[in-house]
Length: 162
Length: 107
Image (cartoon, rainbow over all chains, first blue to last red; front, side, top):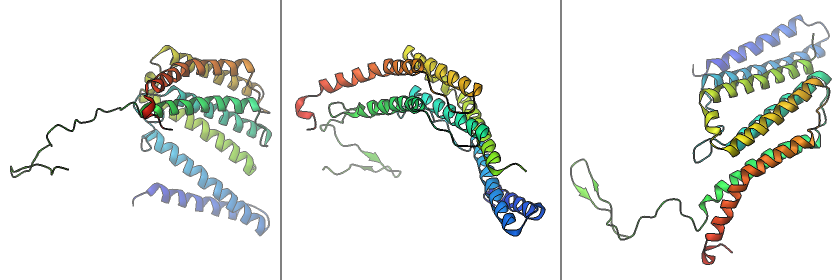
């Protein structure tokens, strides 16, 4: 079996739906609605748990989450990551307390805009490193003789001139 | 029995907090955080980011009934630190553009 965890999730969801369908009082319509609602919630919860477990165990690699394309770490990515987590956790904290979706103030959007703008600008500057006047790798002079390759039998082959 | 909305809200909150903790733990183990702070400009951005994040989290924890406004002072701090971080890079970009011969510039 290639992915036993998915089978376990499906079995657990079916068990949850069965328990809710059998033990909840009410008419049939209400039972069916609650069974599917809680079944969907359980499947979402278990898939989220699988993702967290995979990140924690290293199966999902997040080593390049803060990395630049040329190597090294990016402070603008770090800033965007921190603000995304802070705002999203705050948002759900308010949802838990009020049971309604809150309004997002303009200053919060400005905060995320500054952070995302900085990230976008630094990516643009990074991409502009390959401007037409700047060659990142030196070109091979055309006067050099063509490279030769040696096969396993000891014969030497020269690529044809273009 | 708690309502679906309550269970879903608490589950999502728990998921986000756990995700944040796991990401921070994995990145700390991979030594990525050390590589973040090679110079003074990066340190300035990191410090201003943490100040704004902590200040906002404290505001939310004090009054979790609505999303609070970010104070203009904190926004200004963040904007200035990001501008200081980006200014030398933009300057070097413009100097590189100025060095390109006119014949090689795209129209």
